[in-house]
Structures are given as C-alpha cells and as structure tokens.
Length: 410
Ligand SMILES: [Zn+2]
Image (cartoon, rainbow, N blue to C red; front, side, top):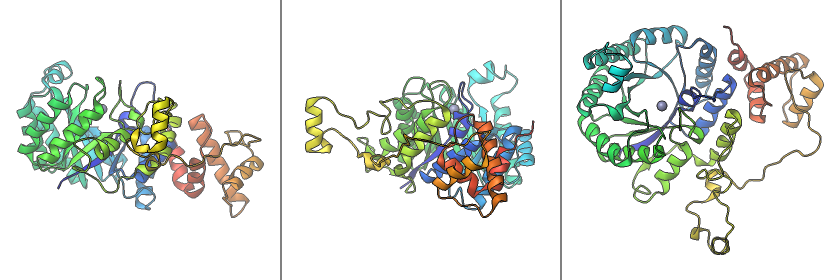
C-alpha cells in the first residue's frame, strides 16, 4: 500500500512569511530537529539567493557527514532553466529540488499578464527539469502554483509532462487555501488516477482547513494507488494564515476517524521529538504557541471542569484522544532560578567556559576555547537572542560548518 510522507517547508514557506524569519544557524537547527522527527524532506531554502549560499552548502556538508541524515535537503526555485543553472553554480552539491511555476488562468493573466500560454508554461517547466537532471539532480518535484484554481485537464497534462521529463513528484499547491476537503479529494483523485505518480499536497490555511485539506488530498492519492507527500511547517507558520501544521497532520493521520489504522505514515516519523521541536520553533520565530494548539498547546492535556477532571483521572481515554508521552511531553524541565551566566556577543572567556562546563563540554586547549567563543559571539550577533543549549553544542561540535553558516558577505 502506498504511504504518506512529510516534506516540511518551514525553512522556505515559513521564513518567507511577513514578520517572520530565522537566522541561518536557526534554519540549521530546524533541519536537525526535523531529521529527528523523521521527516522525509526539508525544503531548506533558496539556492538562487546569495545570502543562503553558505548556509545551504554547509548544511549539505553536514548531510554528507551524517549529521543531518537521512532527511533529504531540497532547494526551492522557479521552474525556469536560468534559475536551475544559477542554483547549481552557487550550490553545486544540491541533490533534491522543487521547481515552481504558476498554472492557473488567473496567474497567467493576472501575474504573467498574458505573456505565456499554457504550452509555454509546460515548456519552461520541462526545460528546467531537464536542466536539473543534467546537473545531477536525484529527486525533483514540480510545483503547480495555484493548482486549486487551475483547469484539471491542464494539471494532468502538466504533471505528465513533468513525469516524462524526469520529475519524481507533482506538487499540487492550494496557494490561496481555496480548496475544501471535498474538492481536494475529488481533484487529487482525478489527477492521481491519470498521472500515476507521487503527489505532494501543499495547502494553506486561509479558510482554516490546511490540515483537513492536506490529509484529504493525501487520502485521495493513496486511494488511487500513489504515494502522498504532505507539505507541513512547524507550528503552522507560513504565508498569510499559514501552512498545514506538522504535528496536527501527523496526529490526524494516526488518530482521526477514517484514517487511523487505514493509512500508513512513513515509518520514520517520530512524534517523540515534537515537544522540543515545536518549542524551539516558537522561540526561534518569536511566535508563542497558542494554548489550544493540537498536541503541543498548554491546554492540550489540561482539564478543569469537575466532570472532565474526574473522568480523565479514572481513565485518560475518557477525555484524551492520544497520550502526552507520545509527543515527548511529561519530562521534567530544569529552569535555573538563581545565578546564570549567559554568553552574548560581548562575552569573555571566563563566563564562556562556565557555560560550556555546565554543558559538560571540554576544550582541548585555550586556542580551541577562544575559537568557539568567537563563533558563539558571532552567532549572538546574527540571532540577537540568547543561544539555546542545542545551538551551543552544535557550534562546539561542528565549528567549521558553524563558521560557514555564520559567514554572510553581501
Ligand atoms: Zn506556500
């Protein structure tokens, strides 16, 4: 039976969102956390954007070293040959990518101003796919932007052309969050039955249905015999009202009536890392987690009313659909309430050594300690907020890659 996989786009859709952004070292940590969550692929950035280059190349090196592995790291770019060529100039070791182009009449008229016909769009896309193949791409997804407002038969034609050119997946983008679970099921069924290739669901939350649409679309693909790949983000960040929240999607497939036990998730997915991953994303984006957030919110396992509290104490299954332990919750967390030495961009060696001693990291000599201190200072300059323990450990373990990630040359 076909499976449902996750392609997370926090480091692409999430960071391109108004009012949101991540430092390059935070994007790196997101890739590490997503790998721990067993996500199939992280859309990790923009290979044609110059300020991403060092980050992307260093992360691909970390992938080669096995630090960010087995997750795939994929770049996003427009489905035009010039973008592909530029991407491979700047990020030569790129193995996976998604190529995006608008397909709806609205976009052809309203965005491209009638400059391209549907045939032109297909041709640009296939040329881009072939160019990526020539440059050594191993896995290519082709995105139909605004697919939910695109003529269905044209989408089939577009996806078949992508498949023939060598793409491995077709991404159906509900760019405006226009679909409903009913329409996306019908539309994906129609496409999947005709193209017989793995389908990605990229859904936005403008009508509050991103998660519902994603799982409905995935169900349609699997029912038609195709693997499904749901695009998610951490805590649902993303353009406007956001994308499908990663944890909600995993919970829905595992526990929703009609999906639970019937549809198979990528066996690598691991909800145990959800709690710390979502908390990290909240800290890094500086966006609090709503108390009602599925699985992760402060109220997700809280009970106050007499009837509920009594019921859940007798048997948790009375009022809880899944267990908090499964999400990595329930472990004690230590918060220092006395003196704290923190490292910042103006820290000295004594305080710095104290911080790393508490993390049980030893340096082989003074020179190494000073080298790591310098990197930590630069990381503070870039982030403008205190580094987490995971970030401090990352810098100490992989100083060469950390230095590359921290190097921004306009
Ligand atoms: Zn999007």
